[in-house]
Image 1 (spheres, rainbow, N blue to C red):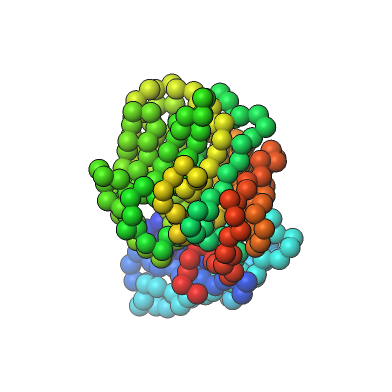
Image 2 (cartoon, rainbow, N blue to C red; image 1 turned 90 degrees about the vertical axis):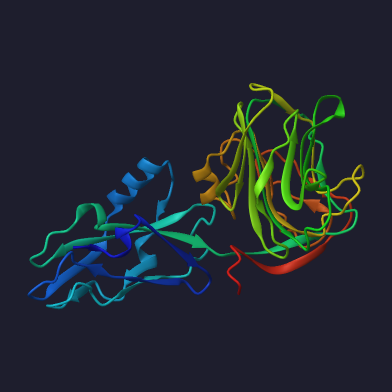
Length: 349
């Protein structure tokens, strides 16, 4: 006997919003049974500890008052191999839940009548992806966000740039994303869409002599999460948490200085972004794929290595608050148009 979902994967992702969430849980047998089999469901916190240890994740056990089964028991009737579904029901999160953390519910078959459990598939990590509803800025003609820290970010032997992006179109070249100025005010990290050597809907980065380009071709009027990392040897791009490219840095071991940080086309650039942005982050560490995938839409301000954290949710004004512990507030070149009710991830509602 085993959990049906666990046969193909040890995890099941469930999206939770302000109405809560539900997901069906069923069990199966490896062969027909001649008699009814009773399956008893429960939860296994130790399985979540083991999952985190194995995968390098930090999922928290959701407090037990927030979840329950519609029924704790199911029956696989004689002559069949599958049970009727029961519902795992998740209550909406309230102010007592720290939304910067990731939560999971470790579902398990705890016992059954006259049938052995397949141990490798008798537990299932239900990972909860919370819908974040935010107000975000639209960066139109001549608008960008920038900061010149009082003290430059120095000694960066690794780093990560992250952002959520929605663009009206991908029909122009040289649409700037991050532009990082270093020593002597030279641009040392420059990311954009479009160039004479790539398509307008293709991401490109210029870091030293390297010029990697994305495999992904991006679609207009769609939200993406992007993360661009440097680990001392390689440059990597992740799109929606998935690795797009790995590119050897031309000067391995290079240590960077971030003297001025800009997002979107500044006064030295030609084209406007013409799109919405959210969750802009600068790190002094190379984030792993797991860390990126598990924290695309919110992250703890206390995360190690988080140097700049612009949530971009002010709703007005020209100041973009830094939610890290470093007070590196950004400034819009001019007032933006603010869009309300944007959902992350974009579930089409």
